[in-house]
Each structure stands twice: as C-alpha cells, then as structure tokens.
Length: 636
Image (cartoon, rainbow, N blue to C red; front, side, top):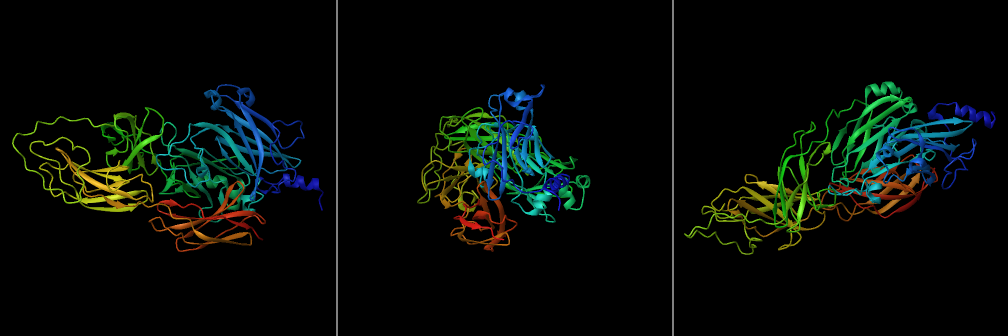
C-alpha cells in the first residue's frame, strides 16, 4: 500500500478532472485570513491585485478596494465565497481594471466556480496536495434589486420592474462538488460560469448523454436598469477537458462542431454564443441575452448554433405625444433596424423625470400608438418607447415630454340650425365620462357606443372584441379605445388599448392577475368620442394556487415528491409542476412533471443530506407560490 505522501503525489499528478473530492475537516467555518502569514499558510488570500486601465498592477487596497473570502456550507456541499468590494465612487480606470485573486485552499479542491464578473478566468495549481486557486477578470456593472425572490429565481417582477441603481460586482462562490454525484466531480471538475444576471442557478445541471447534457435551471433579471433601459445580460461558461473526455470527444472537435444555447421561458429562443477552445477546454460566451423579467431556463446542446446574427431591435423613430385628462397618447414609427427578427410589440412607459425613475404608467401594443392611463391630470410626464422582438426588448427612443391634461381644440362654431339628436342611450348605459371631445363638425356628432363586447381573459391580459356602433354620428369612425376599471361605474382606468377604425379588437396588457376588472369601449370620429355601453367584467389569469398535501420519500439517493392539485388553477389550465429541494444556501435540485402527474423524482442527491421539499404549479400566467415545506433526509 502506498504511503499517504505517495498517494497525494499520485493524485496530484492526475488530470484536472480526477482530483480527489473530499472536503477537509480543517476547512474554516467562517472568514479566511485576508493575507497568508507564510509560505505554508492555507485558507487565506495569498494576493489580491488590480491593474487599472492604462496603469500597472497594485494591491486592491491601494485602489481603495477590500477583499474577503469566507466558507459557506449547506446540505449539498461546501463553498468558498470570495469578493472584492467597495466599488462605489471609483473612477473608470478602477472599475474597468483587471483583477487577480490568489487563494490558498489547502486540501479543499476548488472544482466549480459561479461568479458575477466580466472576463472571468479560473485556474488552479497543486503542490504537495495543497491547492492554489487563481481568479482573474473585471468587475461587472449589475442592475439588480434587493429582492430575494429574484435571486432565488422565482420572480424578478414584470416588464415595468426597475432595478436599483447599477453597482459593480466582482464576487463568486467556488465549490468542491463533494456533495454532488460522481459525474459532477469528474465532468465538471474545473468548470466555471459567470454572468451579470441576478437570477441564476447555483450549479450547472449535468446529465452525460442527455439532451441537453448541460443546462442552467433559471436565468433572468429585473427588466429595466435605473436609467429605464432594458437589461441585456452576458453569460460565460467554461467546460473543462474532462467534460469532453466523458463525452468521447475533444475540446477542439466540440468547438469546431459548435454549441447551441437555447433559452426557454415565454418563448424558446436560440441565443448567440461563441465557442473557443482554450485552457484545455471550451470557453462559451453569450454576449447579449435579453430575458429580463421573463425568467427562463438555459440549455446547452453540442450542435451548431441556430441563433444566426439576430439581435434586439433598434429604437422606434419619430416619437410624439399628446396629453389628455390623466392620459398620454404616444405615436411612433417602426425602428430603422429590426435586428433581423420581426418586431412583435412595442412598450411605452411614462416617467415623472426626464431621466431615470420608476415607471408611472405604461401601455403595450402591436400598433404604432397607444394611450397610457392613470396619470395625474396636469402632470408632466416623459415617455419612452421601445420595440420588442424574439431576442427581447431593445433600447428605448429618447423620452418625449407630455402634459397629461386635456387641451381644448376649438372646433367650428355650432350651426344655428338644429341638428338631429342621437337615439336615446339604452337604459342602464352610463353617460359619457367627461365632456366629449369637440363636436359637432359639419353637422356630425360623436358615434354611438360599440356593441356586443366580448372579453377573453389571458395571462395578465384581456382581449377585447366588439361590434361597430349602430351609428357613426355622420362621420367615419377613426378609432376605438378599450379601458379597464376596478369598478363597474366611475373610477380611473387601470389600463387601455386602442384600435383603428377598421379593427374591432385590442388587448389590455400589464394587468394584475386574479383581480376582477370592468371593461368599456368607446368609438371616436372627427366630432369627438362617444359614450360606452355598460361595462363588462372579466378576470385576467393569475398563477395557480400552491399544490397541496405534499409528501416526500427517499431511497437510493433520490427524493420522490407527491402532491395534490391546487384548489385554484388561476383561471388557466395548469401546464406542469416543479418540485425543488433546498439546503441552507437555496435550491440545490429540481424535477418537473406534466399537468396530469402528481409525482416526480429528484436524483443524485447527497446521502444523509437534510433537505426541504417544496412543490410549485405552473400555468400560462407563471409559477405559483411554493407549497408548504416538507423536511426530508436523503437515504442511501
């Protein structure tokens, strides 16, 4: 039998993917030393330097930065969390500088790193069985919220959710994978990922021989940064040589074949990605992922990318605005650049300030105009319009100022001769809300109310259809407006949509799911806007209720979850279920099941782990709140 020293020497000589995975007993429970006292010191930061843009290497402390490392443990393994902090107020030469951290990790094997950083590169060396981890890269600007639901990957808000002020981050966690299945400790030994997205899984999901073989359980971010621009995220993944050896190929051959990165959320979209053979493995970089608040999974396939050169669209052109009583109507022209994918919709958002700030109101449409309701009459708003295609939301056009108050338009004086009165409003119909816009014009009057309203609820939206009025008032109808209210009569509208005079449908969007709304439609001609019929009620879909009666059983390092359907499906059919087990640091593994199933099994868990199981239901509106937690210990 070889001596311990000889065994260590033998293991140290093995390829990167075959290093031992045994968490050392002497791993510190908390903070590591910020300096190494001597050449034999371990669990300490050997060096931390930054090379400012255009400058020379110096300790991070000289640039006014702080560095730390601390052990984090959960039921799924041990991590070393490292970070460089105090970026606020630093000049561009520092925030754009190149960092290098060297951590002495002792016999703790630094296998997998998950970081928030730009240009990340991770490597390690070993001497006499003791490892040294080298991390280099740059701080990355992040548009995040103080929101644990977003960090956990449950929800990052909606299309109007604005992030906190942008801050720079260079931080991450490095794991030894001791608590993972054996295929992880070989195939992912030396792997790392880096992204500026707030919502992301702790660990890549690795399934050798599967399709896909590698995936990321969730990816996303608050929709807008503090300036009001849609957030576009970057993602870097490095797959080491052992990953390709396990697949029976080489890094060079795999890079030549290519990789297809596909995100699946509200839509399934191939994302642009480049693959480069380097450092014995393949480095994958996706520079422009526009998921925003539409959280999605990210799957990586070993095949040529299908993304092409498609990008998000450019900004809409010739934006103009008109104010009304508590409204702002915005008009625009299509962007000159579609990004290679058809524009599917536009978003207009009103802000109280000319730059930055929270969204005060919004509208979304497939047309080239829409009206933002619910604004303060007399207030000045600054409206931005952006276009959306399959790759996400593009940059907004420059904001235009709109005063949300009606400006009378002096029409011609009324004719002295009497004009026919419109037919009486049917019993129970409300009178027009506010004075109609000026009339009569050349003897015309505003149209009668549109007829036969029909409402079709959807996920946070209602599709409204109607039949033309009995009379156009003697002037062609130029447009229709549908408005949603909280009450059957009176009140301020919560949302609106418009249609031209030759269309009889539009979609109310951005609604709160599960809340009953009352909808009316008015018609407009040259003489003004006519009355509406009695409002019709509908309830937009919301997420399902939480699954009930959750159970958990364990054997063979598996956990099988069981449940009953929620009491409410939120108004839309349940499309599936997701069961998650969590340790102290968050979700560690998931399984999914179709709508008809009431069980699924999570595999390859660490024996003896004490985990918490929760089950969530999914429909077209999103993911439910988690079920009541069930404690479970993983059995062999």
